[in-house]
Length: 155
Image (tube, rainbow, N blue to C red; front, side, top):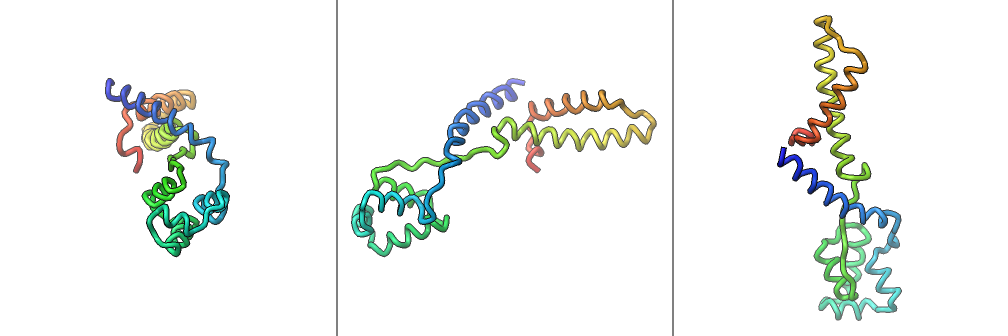
């Protein structure tokens, strides 16, 4: 029980951090990427940025192209940011709104599969449960799975 509680605390702490990134979802960079957009906004030439990075001007063209294509490394982004006197920030935002909601959804899906299997067996044995009992069992099993959070949850 102690492990489940500490895991829940960790998930909630992490949720509070990733929630901060939600506000950034609506921000879109230009098709040319952040490096190009910031560099040109600062009226900095490719040669000037190249000098700050200790690379050649043609390498800046490649750097900006790789960012625009999405094939740039975090290391290169971080270095470019430093050269522009900026700090790179990155993170993830759960599609379901929160990590806890994502776990809830997966636990519910797993619980539904288990209850359906059990329900079919009981029906064949003429011991079918009522709809309200099935819903109660679903809620209980979902909570048990969330608390235990087995690795099978992600299969």
